[in-house]
Image (cartoon, rainbow, N blue to C red; front, side):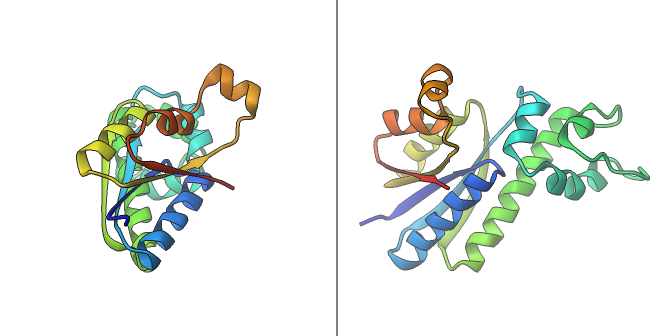
Amino acid sequence: MVERILVGIDGSDNARDALDFACRISAQIGGDLTILHVLMHGRSAEEMERLARAEHIVRDSAPQLLPGEASVPMGMREFLAHPEVDRWRAITEIGNHIVAEARERAEEAGARNVSAMTVNGDYADGILDTAEEIGADLIVIGRRGLGRIRSAILGSVSNKVMQNAECSVLAVHA
């Protein structure tokens, strides 16, 4: 029986698919759902732009971070390069936005006892550490599908989690 489900999200379409799958498991089979986002401090704007739906997130986060600014930057790269943006605060706000949106989506989908959190650090380590802390029975993560060669050279979060988790892992490949 699955009692605790952890789903890792990063704002990407694959993560949204993983969240939806985790919600279905929680609603239909049972298990409390914890949503986790590992904050992207120290990551390049290009990587953040690739991972997140940047235009949507920038549009929603910019008013709090750039009050009184007439025009909102169009992409994550421009947003984080803006002279008035405190990068640390912006990344934290973006993470909070991603988690809040995911929590609302999970609750609407009927997931049980939804909680959401952010942590700092390496993506895979953050997921593995949180799974251990909450006693997760199942980790659900999205998988981008880098391909065999790129994945072997670059590694991937999903591979690291699958190889090192002490519970079951479900990698959702869209």
